[in-house]
Length: 222
Image 1: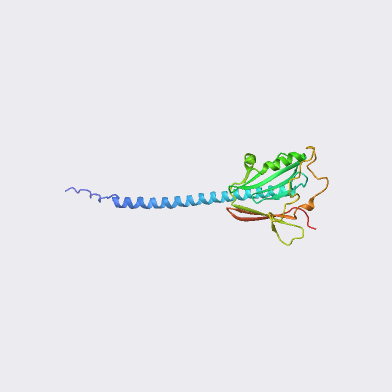
Image 2: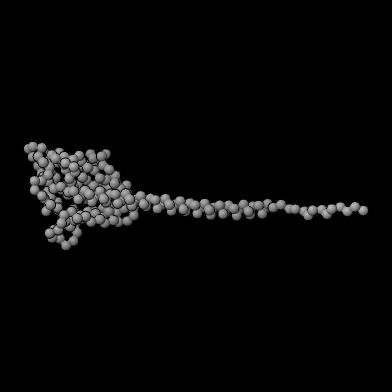
């Protein structure tokens, strides 16, 4: 009598429940992997944004220091004056004198400059024009897009502490002098007027990263 080969054992596939469990586990693993990647991207973007903000802030402070390092007292306008909203100064630039204004408007720090000139009348006209922000806003450069507050302090000869620039009196000239008969008069003083300047200028600036203090020596003490 011929013998029949044994029947193969019954082979069962994955049940629906097993498939669903496997899919759930894969979805969880994929979600965890995505969160890890998203965290890395956020960390990278945050570090890059912080680096860019720090670089920009360093550039702004360098420009601030350069402006104060080239102050030019003269008869055209006060060499340095802070009114709470803006700090105006006259500085040497090339062959002439330039009016520079730093101002905080709508939580943005701007820097505006006039064309360099050697004429007293022209610099005085720019000084008067700079009193109206709308007249010079289009030519102002945004130095910091986010700056919540600022304050300027002077260290005067004979003082033992920093004093608010608004309560220290106007530096150089209390009022804008009357234009001379000839507008071609030189905007630079014939004699040095460094004694009219404070010894140092302190900037206290509040930015998203926190509060920043920068002290700049304007002229030697003594």
